[in-house]
Length: 633
Image 1 (cartoon, helix red, strand yellow):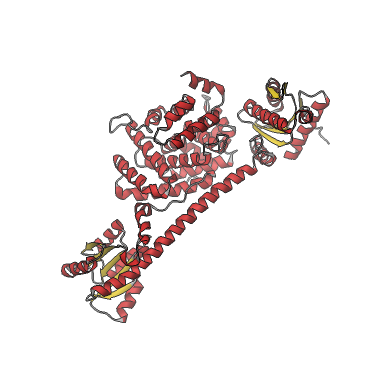
Image 2 (cartoon, one colour):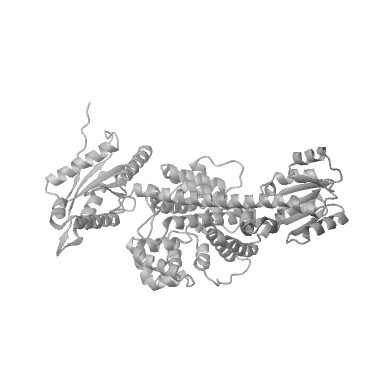
């Protein structure tokens, strides 16, 4: 497709930078070694920590991975290359200019997909779990690409999708962009070298009617894994009222991968726990979700709408005497809407309690297999059991029996010959307790949601604090933080580091002649041109007024001067309309490289500033190198 090929050649698609780009470059050499890869990874502490964590979370070997070298060896060159690429995209594209595209939600969804694929890969051995992680992380990278390359058109497509949700997303995308995120994403991951076995399932896992691969084939397993991971990510970001239905649909599909309903809870809770851990590591928001069992029984939340006396209960009656068990059940169901479950011994009662999650358990003290006291202790040791109302019953009715019952964790003790009226009175306490628990869980869910929303807001505020609002470039504070990191990396690796300070020529005259609105237009156009003209590994920042700073890692003075000249030339060819006039922009650039005598980042920027002053003194519209510092003896 012509449009797809043009996008590949344009250089506008999301691409890795910095250390990730270095890893890609090294790994393409025939003589590349894992040692070289490990040394490059070690220059980036964030990437090092992420690879070590992933190596430990994806391995069944008892001894944990503690070094970058070992993590790289365990994961292999191709996997490390893909992981570095994925993490680089996370760090670079946390936000952007596509207004209707929620960048944070996109990465949160992608991260949960990645962890879902990883967890499924430990059960269904069709590919390396690290490869499955990156497959999940990049499964919807086409959406990020559309938001990056076509921000306005994709924003319109997303708005149309919100207005007409019944129409598939790819139809809205084709209407507004003549391409869809699936087609673009598959082409991108194929270019990045993701194994070909993934591309077929990636192209079809969102289809309403995906292709019918052979049941036991690798492609069919990968397709099911992607569909399950995608639905789990949808569940993680869904509103509370639709979670039970999404969970039910997920469990139906999971059976096709031999994940039975009784195994689903542990699987999902574990993935959600990892999601929260990874979200902190990657600075990505993750919704605080209730447990699997809480989502399953979400209908409990509506029970407090009824009067206390009318609230139906789920009750387990555990009694080894069949006649007495039936009599107690008859008392409980008479003129009530309670649902009552029988159990003939303590072991059966415990299993039933974990299955149906009753509100109340009425257990006889002398139960077979597991007596009433032991049943209470076993239930109180679990999260679900700690919320149940436990009543023990027995022949004797004295203070010592009551003490033993409370010591075992019971909420009360009733005699075997209790009347129907007395029994229903005792259950009122259970109903009130359940109402309080329901209200508390609602409050806790609301607090969790508020905390999650605050975390997202705080991250956005943190991003805003580091972004120049006019141009969208990193501001001075962010520039100096990035420069400090580049300085530290250069100190460890011994690689060169250069900076450019760029100043728009005669900018004051533009403001005075055409007004400040025109000046803002010039700054935005200059920023956009510099950002697209700069090398992938370089970082362009606005440090104040009409001045920009470009950080060039792994770059000596000669290469930095060539890059500066290209920036200057590209900008001078840009025509900007100001009022009735069309103007060309020129800039003066000062270039400096870290030398043995350069003491810190301030000294490096100062050298570039001096070179900029020299460029202006020499007539402007030129790049000028800083003069080497004289060595003092």
